[in-house]
Figure (cartoon, rainbow, N blue to C red):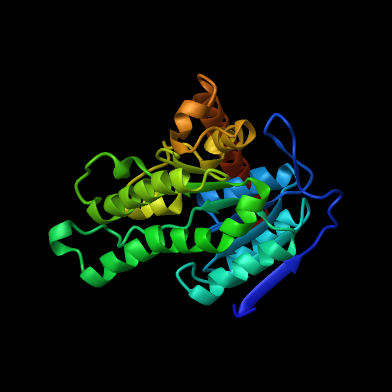
Length: 289
């Protein structure tokens, strides 16, 4: 292993990875998820862990990744590798870790880069930063997919490339990020044709309340956006139904009204947590007084 930080917790698998006739996965299949220490990547890792998937997860921030590993290891086998997905050696470590667990059945290329905050216009976009955006959002996902394809083919697996509406709609200031996601979409479509044994999905999760979205709108209030957990059922449905390769929107995979209901529940949970925090603070004030 070349990655400097490796944290592993293992829970003995009950059965070998297997796929049910109806397309749903059984046993302890292996998923590799990049950018899994927060936001959508973390939400997907939690959703898969709850179903018994073994996980290989990565993030650049070792401390945050360690906390996630500790949490999820209560549910399943977790290998957490801190590193940069653009690094060749780190990607090799991720592929090796998946192989040691029995081989990947699912790859989620979630790690992404905006290219700057606030995001620069194309006329003012530093070329080095633009190249870095494409390295994270296009080259790294393809490179990791190349490494994992032998495992994915063996298991009849799936690749999920996280896309964006900025890949298909022109938004001022989103040129670098949007162009990179458009390239990822196109690469996903071609890979889906070239790899009939593997399903390749580009998925637009929609606008979510994540740190990345906050970075895209620095100083603005994004508390009205749904939490990443609200779209996890859409991804799980895609995996369960093993739909054909293609581009999907998470909102189309959720039950009618489901996203709103989950979002409302999440908001209610936030309000409850805030109320509890205020109550604790009030108690603390009384005690200090």
